[in-house]
Length: 177
Image (cartoon, rainbow, N blue to C red; front, side, top):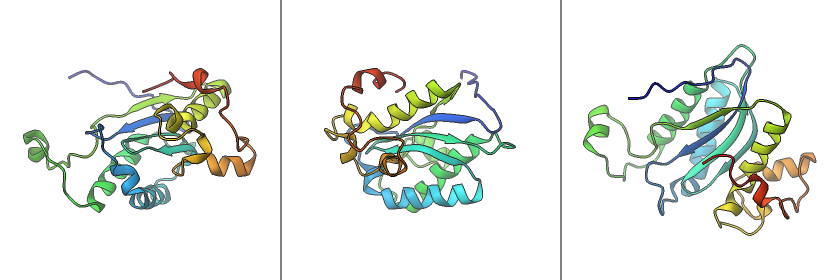
């Protein structure tokens, strides 16, 4: 197995992509959005982090989060989010022998994509990528039409205009995934 190197940085800001194991036609995350929100709130309360941007699509999510200055353990947070979400929803998925042996659910891909944000331009590009993603996947025509996103909060704070994304789609389309 490859030796994955993680970008451990106390107080770091990171972009993540976290996928369901079975993505095709799976709407598990949006179907159980209230459970996911509750789990994220609970993990955030126990192991603080700042959510700069977050979008939940039917089969995956993207986010930009910032860890406390004395903490680099994003892996703990993702393990808890995945585990607590998995425990909170009914067991309906098929599991292979490996997952049965490990006592794992068949919900999440074991790994996730993480990228340490390097500077303000990188931060902005990844925030844009997070929020344009529902449009990129053809789920909505306008970013403002997707309900499971921090975009709406960021419009209220003045970071984005309510009609954002006109003409920006190509510039943020290939950052990750």
